[in-house]
Length: 118
Image 1 (cartoon, one colour):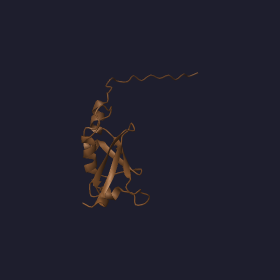
Image 2: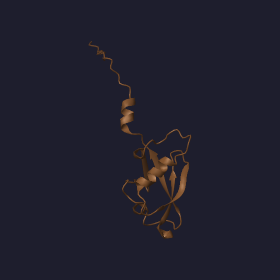
Image 3: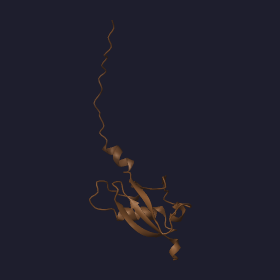
């Protein structure tokens, strides 16, 4: 694989710490990057992704789609040769879990009128 096809990527977490940098081929998909993030997630963090679909990658202010390749996500202008691309990692727990955790109040509500007629 030619050297110019490799891209250095560092993943910035919510608390400012980093994972990486790692070298990826320009043909690697965003889904492959997310799998690496989940497997290399640092121990002791308060938020931990349990699956790849809970991870969102942001580069240049855009959320990256799983089917895109690293080569498609690179900036065409202003990229420093030999520089490291920093992608921000956002962990978003699945909605099914958060809906079941919500407390449902089944007690009937009493209707109380506080109007005063003078």
